[in-house]
Length: 224
Image (tube, rainbow, N blue to C red; front, side, top):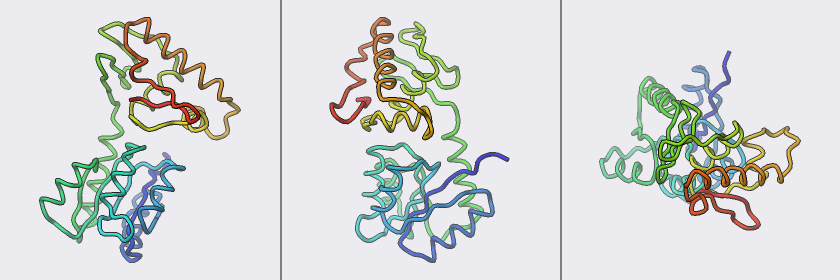
């Protein structure tokens, strides 16, 4: 049996959270629940999930502001939930980085179908292009102007993580956790070595890597 997909459910209405869990857990999802945007952001900064179901009307910071803050450091798929079935809300939600939108009340089958469709779409091999540099997950290949740049598997994975989370700063510890795993006995110098190799290989191919792969002194690395 495959690993359960982990969903983060964010809604200040306890009854709604319980209803969502009732729908989703029997269909093979692991559900983590939070009752406000601050709790959701704190959790996402320290844990990985496969998808976020995010209510709009919440006290403190609403769903729109929460989604904006999440997009500052993560590309996790987000489905917005709201009782306001209006075109302006749809446009606003999608404009700040949400991936889909469901108006309450909704049918269980519709919710499940939208989650499955979004996870399937996000789970497809991706291809990212940046100034002629193409990171191709499906072919596990990095090219610049049709020239292949030979990266090791870990270098390729690290570059992909940075490309998928542009402008987000990753500390050495976070990169070790995401690339090698929590139990890895890996030092920060290993991360520095991988970053140096990525830069050297991209420079030799003619790609202006120093304009994009930046060191944030005292913090880590980011893709700008």
